[in-house]
Image: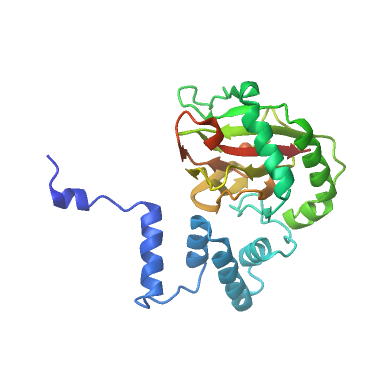
Length: 281
Ligand SMILES: [Fe+2]
């Protein structure tokens, strides 16, 4: 039978460890480290403003270090410089916009999704390990007039997106769209969007919409530091994107990413974590 001492030896979760370190630094008990540790904590916790400030500070001190240059560009809105070597684990570039659609279109999309619950279907994508379920959400590919608005808004921003994501501008062949509803317990484990059956996808995006006040917790998007030769990602190094109503995030499709489980009212479709997600190729 476990004793209290044994229970207390349980290693803290990464979240708890990050929280503790922040408290110690905040209380002046340990000095802020002169490396990426603190910035990594901020982006792991989804505090993107704090991460941006920390990368700015590091960049001012260490201009010329490729990793800091890249992170500073990603978080402070500069153009992403040349990517790191393919064998390195690189942080995922991303571009985020708040108030993307505005209230009227955002509300229209929410009304559309909630009133069309009947057109949503469960996903059945399985992991390479067929015993482990990779994904649990409801989706529909019938995106209605909000889908047309999304195609137009995304196309218009392509040059800016390419610049910020560090990729050459390209002619759009397709914009794939779907609306997803994450109900209680739904998730999407770590994956890439341009796998074997989905070649040609270059930029992925997720637009968030939901009832106000926000009816769910969780459902954070983790963008993992990834490498591509060979393909792998670092489980403990990621940027957390916390869903905000009417915000959108874009990132290169090849970076590994994950959606954490959602906590919301069971059996209430309107309380879902809704997204309109897509791929530009
Ligand atoms: Fe994805």
